[in-house]
Amino acid sequence: MKIKPTQKRIEFERFLLTFGINDRNPIIYPKNIDERILKDIYPELKMYLVIKNYKNKKSYLYEYYKNHSKKKTINLLSKIKYNQKTSISEIIWTIEGNLKRLTVSDNKFILFAFIKEIKNIIPVGKCEYFPKPKDVLLCKPIGSQVIEIPENFIAGVKHKASLYKRLGFGELDEDNCQYAIYDENMVLHPI
Image (cartoon, rainbow, N blue to C red; front, side, top):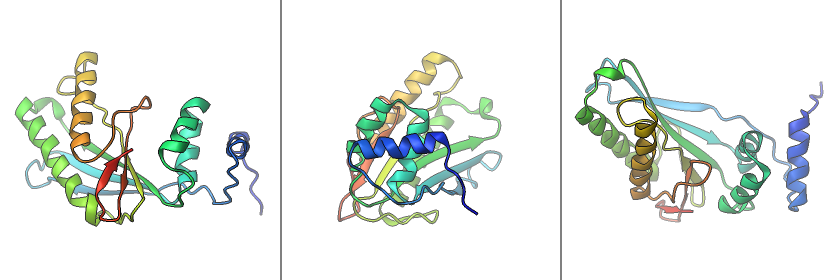
């Protein structure tokens, strides 16, 4: 049985063709691979490090295309070096539980512990994530600092973005993402 592509998918394929890209790779939706972290320190909270591993850049770009303007998608095409046949992955962290009881020092501890976890997975892989040279890794540094008010949200994004820069990610982009690419030594470099 043949599945008919959606109108958005047809538009996306035509969009790629306007840039001379005739990519016949299938669009594969990523499986979220997550691992609970810091369970011994804060057992009442469920903190997860999540990796969304897109098998090819076309799969990620299609998701991006559905939610962003064509202009932003064009900018992303060159940023992620679309013509290099490598994968792209997104790293996310989530916390579930009663966050209102956390103090500012608890929040700082959790943030730095998460950064330490990222440092551990970046070069060697974890959560079934095994990067190769020239693979792209992205993150979205979203979230409030302590209390969910707009001022704290903006400050939280800026603070997390500066921490991600220390890990090798680039500047915060207009799409609220930061991108990095692995070199031959598995070190991240900003893009």
